[in-house]
Length: 414
Ligand SMILES: Cc1cc2nc3c(=O)[nH]c(=O)nc-3n(C[C@H](O)[C@H](O)[C@H](O)COP(=O)(O)OP(=O)(O)OC[C@H]3O[C@@H](n4cnc5c(N)ncnc54)[C@H](O)[C@@H]3O)c2cc1C
Image 1 (cartoon, rainbow, N blue to C red):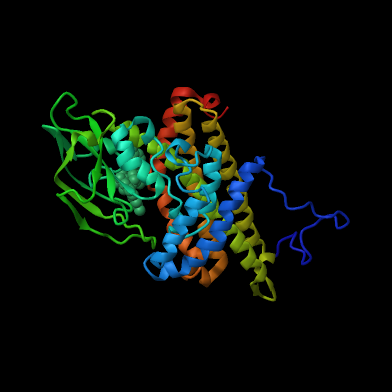
Image 2 (cartoon, protein in one colour; image 1 turned 135 degrees about the horizontal axis):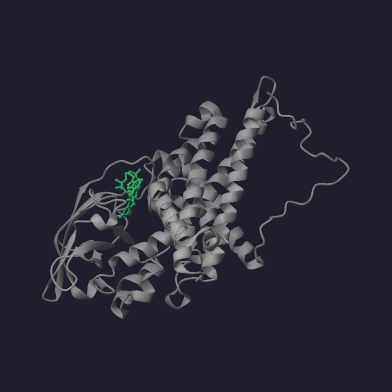
């Protein structure tokens, strides 16, 4: 069926009135817009052109081009955008970080990961030695971290981890098998989460800096995943790994609080990246629909196609507003519990939205949408994990419902 408004000449109802200029509707400061535009240009001109190459080469692009991209991210002030200026970061506001992440979300194959965000929670809790040894070099791009938290028996239920840490003289002895350790192949240290074995904090969580060249660390296997990324998440065994006591992050018993802080941040950034992915998908699917002719007219003229695009755009707008407002709330330092609930809402909605949009985009592209050279096919696979990592959709719903029960509607969304 043809759409009722799909007149060939366009969608203007009043032909005497000129179109309003294409103005962004969300109120952003000139500085915010400039950061957004700076990132968009980097993504469009430098990263997107490499997508197909990466898809065909296991996510890899030539080393010199990756190094160039990383250097550009640093030069553009996008690298370590979440870190304090005193450490060499660019200390963007949370809204600015969301704007950057949204643009990064527009590129497939993890090519945007050159815009790296070191653990923002770390500077407040780590020692001078840890700052100098791991965090500052990470901000400069000289070192790279990965997270070893999840285990075969402990995913959503992080508290079920079986990895242990035992104090032996001036060293901790670490044991455990970690799963999905993303970027292990590019990192040179990890954050290892364990439960204390013995001592005053027996059974409580603790987190450690672990250099990956420490004896006793072994890759168990490198499974293949749905997406085609250069960063691999292998299973890794830590067997009697000895680290200096000075590698303990914060205090024994603190481990979970760092993980939760990291989750909160990443959930917001996932929401932003999902908005970027949806933006690209809708843009490309709309352009295709206007060009692709079947039954003598562009498929954009068919109401079935219009409805898929209209639903997608509407949902993207909702997700984007939610994500931007949450970022502004964090910039306003609203209560952490409120941030926690709103991060879950934004991640839940935006990741599920991106999944629906990717699915519709594949449908609009038809058979082409099933080809790996097509952006919709790649995003269809890639955004799937956004409903799983950093807490599944079911876990986000549990968090939201828990907060709703404790605080009520007004406290959570005004
Ligand atoms: C590509 C990828 C990269 C990752 N990178 C990392 C990383 O770098 N470091 C790291 O530590 N981890 C990483 N993870 C792990 C990720 O965080 C976990 O996969 C995620 O937390 C879910 O855990 P799980 O896979 O064990 O699923 P499970 O916890 O086993 O869940 C299985 C199913 O049960 C549901 N479920 C579980 N509990 C409940 C509940 N209480 N109520 C309702 N439903 C429930 C879940 O929603 C899901 O549908 C990564 C995962 C992937 C896929």
